[in-house]
Image (cartoon, rainbow, N blue to C red; front, side, top):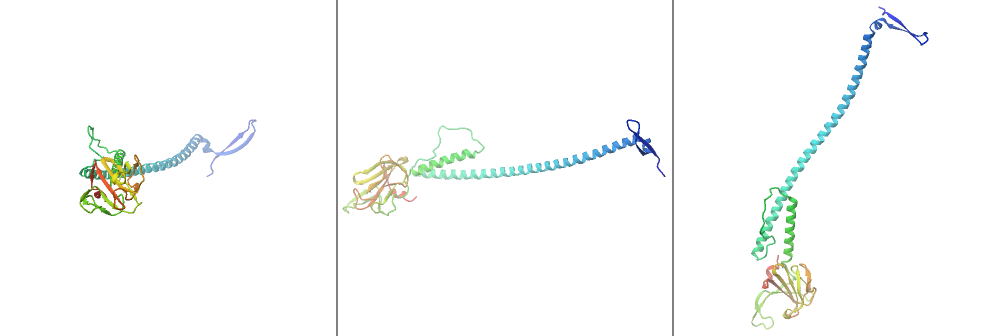
Length: 285
């Protein structure tokens, strides 16, 4: 069946025919519905395009948001792991400090037995609340200061050998080495060696005498902390001066045979608060 058509003539401004077209009659009769349908179709297409673009953008942002959430979750896990590691390290560090504290207490006990002053005495007229939280930084400073003080105190305690030669005469009573008759008190130890060999201080301290002193011959006398004093006698020469501070192991003179001596050797004396004691016990440390 042939569809009916209606001719539509388009005129210009002068009334002359410009264009003639044929449109199906049904469209002309129902032009309102067709126009509405066309508008609806256009709106539908526009809506679909907007939805597609919006969904694409939404998917993109959703993916980015998911990535950010995953990154935050990973950072949270890493932070938790780091915190757990730090707590473990803190426990290990605290145990290390406790071991140091135990060792320091043992050293203090041994120093008390030897009649020495403790390097960490008990505090008097002190108090305050105990903090439960451990401040590792302050704890580290505390033990650093204590160990430095211990090192300083040990530097001032005569230990070790002033010379590596063998002992020819020990501390105590002995026969007179010149007459080989009678006995006499020997207040130090004699260490043999060759003239000119180095004699070294057994502890840090201050030189109070450097030169000739009666039967000692040329002697260096060094005062140390806590009432200690060492004497290095029969030297051929001295390497220090009065008032000079010396370190443990520093050369103070050279071995010789000056003063009351039968041959080249070092006469080494150790005093505690003015009392001469046997230095042989301090040679091995």
